[in-house]
Image (tube, rainbow, N blue to C red; front, side, top):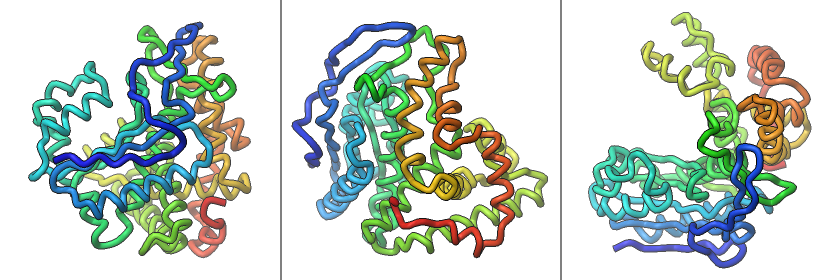
Length: 353
């Protein structure tokens, strides 16, 4: 039997559709969803997921939401199931409700045969530009680990941050509405490079875990582990003739090519998290990496689309909020990664400061 847990965040939850359609200009359609300003996280546990685990997940989502202050974040469904015990057809029906019936994998999902539903180590998060809903989902490899240590709670903050990241590229801060490029637009807006998306989520998660004193989550210890892993990957890359840099971990296509060469890339997480920490060090605050960078993407993207340029929003927001182009940052970060470990560790700030 499915158990539904609702976390009250601001006001009452309203169904994901219909949306209030505002005026459409340029190549955008504008929306003010019923949930805006009243967001909730709906944690759904299917057969096989213990009540104790769901309570821990619910608390972790609440802490993750609170860490972002008053940022507008979409109504988000967090679905958790057991690949062997849960009814995967029920999982699929809910998944399709959130992802939208036009989702290419939806028929497969509703039959319970979508491959991701059978993966015991599934963990994912994002925002759907059609349904205007956030989605996190995970299987036992994620939630069973919480019985051993709170490290798996970090995944909650990581995946929830992906909802926030991908929602904010559509959110027009001053207008307080979402703007979604029409179908004729060639590409949807990007959050940024792959290392920023994954490293940003990891950095946020390390901060949330440490701030809330989750077990086994000493901030400096965990960040040092990530640093040592990043440095080790750089050394391993050199042995195989691979340059392990942020620039070479900027797209999923680049990551796939590395895997095709028999390399196991993880620098997008470890190096990416340290890139965020270094940006915080350079700017003196986490506001840039947690809020300001994201809140400017939609406005700047629209400006540059009017000029015929797609996916310039994140580049211009990076330059505006960090005082340099992304290529200039690449050069700085390459030099930073040559510092001694002890010197690198000294740049870390108090979590969420």
